[in-house]
Image (tube, rainbow, N blue to C red):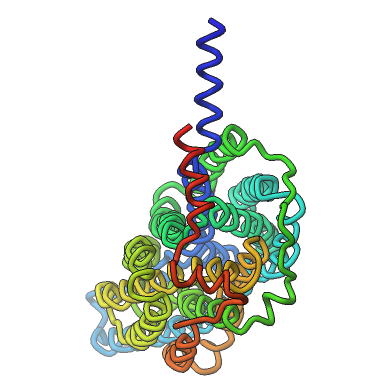
Length: 482
């Protein structure tokens, strides 16, 4: 009995040392966080519109809103003249309702955009605190804190029935996301010190993020259409609970102090190479962030799209983001991460210009697919590049640099939704996307700086040439074999 329990303890101890299990936990945390992030996309715009217009919900067609007068009796001598008059009145009512709903939907875009941006803005504020905190207490406690906050946010989304309550839920998720993203990426950078393996691991972790983005919109749209608003969030909270239990078993959250002296946040922020890499993440994501609140409403306005169609519209982008992150984790290392990211920004610009040309749901498939694939190219190239830049130019402590990386990601998702409503209102949906496309084209050449970034000293210059740090890599291999 004692031998059996000892063997069981040895297996648990081996699991806790396994880098692969840590990678699974980080990928699941990113999956659930981004699933919650995108599940609300097809739900919240219509839910808020229906709260404000309980007698004229968005699901009611314009023909149903305009109730025509009862037809005249067949014995009326002026039948033809009356019919023409009734048709004119009906058409006038229909035109009036179309204009009225169009104005209401544009106004709704502003409110929805601010709510969607609140998560990223709060995350933006939290990142500079979470990054240095991981240097003092390690990665596991902030990671678990992120799970708790996400679980609470999901429950509030499930039962919230007003704009202010849902706004609080979205903002609370921002703090949880900051804890999970910064700690998760820092944990992977520490466990995978070899640059090539780190790129592969982060590609897989970002694949979890992509899977959450992939599942979220169609899951939210279908569940809201056929089950209701509460059900999808209750399912997400149950999944989050399972992830929390896995973290307790494998990570055993506790305070672990870093041995090496971490680089200061100021030193990292003033490093031009880190800023260029982070900027690429921001510009890559700002376009899709602007589409999240505005595309469903634009589809409802121009295509009369149903709820499930508004959710499914994001499916090509999500599938291709999943493919792009997994493909360019290893491929970005071979071809040059700067080149992969530069190409991604150019493709993003082209796809953003093509989106407003769509007149049916099917027309959105190719530009949305290209957009998702290209964003995957940039994210999966620049995230490991940030860790590599810290290795060669600073000290191998990763909390703060991934706080910068996550801040760059959030900046796109803060600026995008916050300004999309105002831009749609002032210059229109089409011109908004053209402007973002031009910004992506303009930023792409900046990535030439990352072609051969200089190291801080000769030892780290050797790290660039050999492209691996064998001592740390071998020590982790031995730990797993034992």
